[in-house]
Length: 157
Image 1 (cartoon, rainbow, N blue to C red):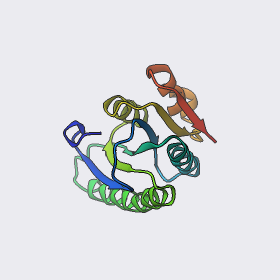
Image 2 (tube, rainbow, N blue to C red):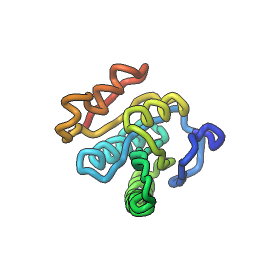
Image 3 (cartoon, rainbow, N blue to C red):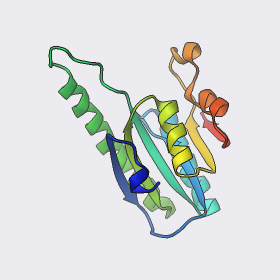
Image 4 (cartoon, rainbow, N blue to C red):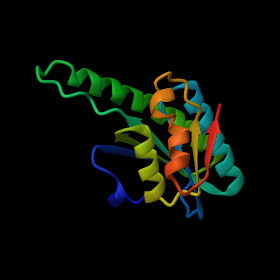
């Protein structure tokens, strides 16, 4: 993903060896066990296929805080999560010797992953299986990506 293509409110970190790779794998990372399984699988696939990984932490937009009390706490929590995930992604990139980009983007996970996959020309999107009960109503991220995307979606338990 080129820096000029990165949406607003985004933080980027780059890890691993430098080099051009023809294939790109996009994965979501939010700290849940299933998302971390998906990240591990994405890096394993990337190492086998000489691909690069773009991992994305899609942070929810904080609700509008008319009283000005809770927004900073939410931003601090998201920043802390991003910092922890950054170390996890860095470790995976180094372990598998795969170039990786890790981005924090605010928005709905399925929308953010779809836009990222389109922007960086993803060859596959790897996500964890949803464990949220609410996804039975609005649809799990993996299922939503499979419906809207033109790339294969691998859903990892």
